[in-house]
Image: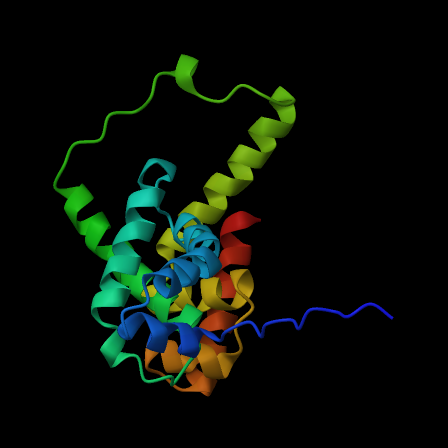
Length: 183
């Protein structure tokens, strides 16, 4: 029987954090690899412009690594990271309100796919984004953490500084309001 090589255990986020704090740079790179895609999805669905996603993800990780000493394990590292990402996005939105936005000309927009399907999908996406924008900050964040990332109410509560019951109520109200906007 051939001798199999032992399989190395996959390090937990907590182990990677500790290794990074001890000077292990590849541990930080592994944390980024594990969580960057989910963070980008969260930021995009929370209203981040596609052109700004990479910068927002990078800023989120910079803030997280600077403040990693404050991470106490009260929730998963990803939950904590998404909370920081939400704050980075709010800061970017405040800065953006102070600058003028220029729309892209139609000839630079995507033109792939069936025109009718694109129109219907774009309209529904627009209504959903508008609906998300009309929710309170807490309702929007609870909704995105629950619906997009599948977090449990206890994790959401720990990340947002509320109770699991309040997180359930915020989610319920967010879903109800979004159904009204999208319908």
